[in-house]
Amino acid sequence: MACVSSHSHPSPTLNPPRTSTHGSIQQNTHAKLMTRDIHRLTPSPTEANCFSLGAISWVSRVETVGTIVSRDMAEKFLKFSVDDGTGCVTCIMWLNQLTSPYFHRFDSSTILLHSRVARRQARDIRIGAVARVRGRVGLYRGGMQITATNVVIERDPNAEILHWLECVRLSRSCYRIQS
Image (cartoon, rainbow, N blue to C red; front, side, top):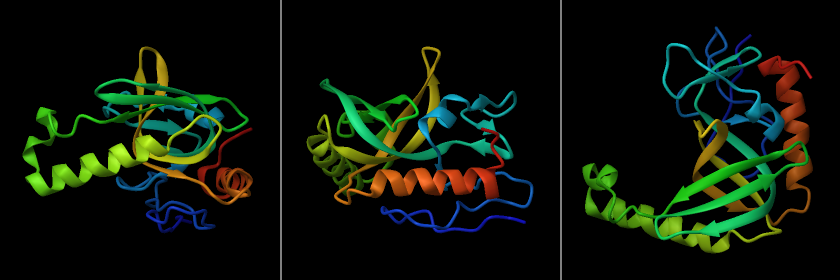
């Protein structure tokens, strides 16, 4: 049975990410994972920037919720770590949208919007805050890292535990991850 879900709502949802009938998460869907499972992702031997875990294949985007435990601001990026109780994952948020050649393919109003959103989100990222982080997962210097595209500081004190519960449910019913 394929899993079906919404993937753009910033607050916890009980719907699993969309998958095809063969277990591959669709391209723009974020797999909701605990940090432990992010570190257990295995790189695809044939697809760049794609990973697998359990019955999930072709994961390139993830979502996790945890406490920000480190923060290092540089000129072009913000590097921070999120701890969800199962481990820590390093996240990077790029802040060089106005100068990076990567963004030159977009129109100037889109680049300006991306830059403003990233800088606003970076200001909100503080040690001790609980954050929902979405982005591309990848290997960097031998470890898993999330290149954050969206960071929401959670105001609901139950956000982290609700994410844990959802991850447990998804790992059993959709992802088929062994503990």
